[in-house]
Length: 76
Length: 248
Image 1 (tube, rainbow over the protein chains, first blue to last red):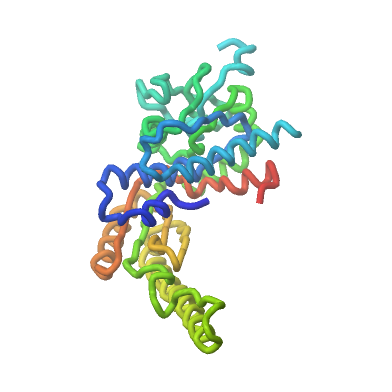
Image 2: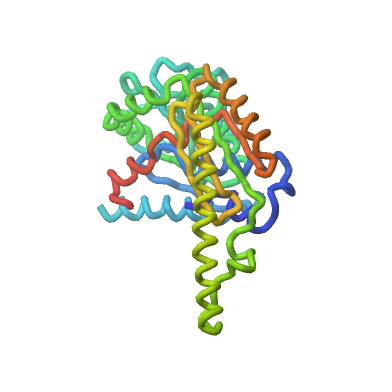
C-alpha cells in the first residue's frame, strides 16, 4: 500500500506543506495503514475531502481492503 | 449492558492493553462517546459505542482515533487497532480470548516502548528526470538505443546502491537506541527511505539526539520525524490478516 506521502511529493514539495499538514499526513500514514485488524464488520465510508489530497488513494485502498474483508467473511 | 445487547451493540475499537491499564478519566472518542474497556481475563480492549452512524474517514475522526490511542499510550504501550475497526462486543471479547497468547506476546514485545518514525526525502530527482537516464525508446537508432538502455540500467543500479547505503547508514546510527526497526527503501522515489522504530521509552532522548546528529551530518537530505506513536507498525497486522483470510 502506498504511503500518503507519495502523492504529495509527486504534486508538490514537502517544503510547501505546513507543519499541520505534515502532522496529518503522518497520522494518516499510521492509523489508516497499520495496526491490528479484527475479523469483524468494518464499516467506514469515504467522505469529506478536507483531507489533503492524500489520502484519497490511501483511503480508497483502506476502504477496498475493508470491503474485501467483509466480502470474504460473507462467503464463508 | 444486558446479555442480548452484546451481540448487537456496535463498538468502535481503539486498542488492546493488559487489563491493569487504566483509562484516563472522561476520555471520549468518535461521536463524543465515552471510551470504556471490555475485559477478558488479563486483556482489555478499549472501545466506544456506536449507533447507526457510519464511521466516516475524515480529518476529525482520524485525529480522534489517534487522540484516544495517544492518551492510553501515556499510561502503557497498547496494541492499536487500525482505524475503522467496528465490531460487536461479543466479537471483541471473542477476539481477546481466541488471540490471547498472540496478543500477550505482542504486548510483551512492545512493553515500555513507543514507535518513532523517520522519513528521508532526497533532492535527487527520480531516474526519469535525468537526461542520460531517460527511458530508451525502441524507435531510436540501434546504437543510441543501447547506449540509453545501458545508462538507464546503470543509473537505476546507482540509485539503488546509493539508497541502500543510505538505509545502512541510518540503521547503523539508530540501532543502539531501538529495539526493532522497519526500513522501507524506494530508490526511485523522492521519499527514499521510511524507518519505523520501536524505541524503549528510556532511550528516547538518546534516539532523538541521534536523529538530530544524522540531520546535521546530511544537510543535503530532508528529514521528517514524528512520534511517539503507539506501535502501529509492530502490531503485525499482516500476519493476522493472512492467517484469517489467506490474503497475500
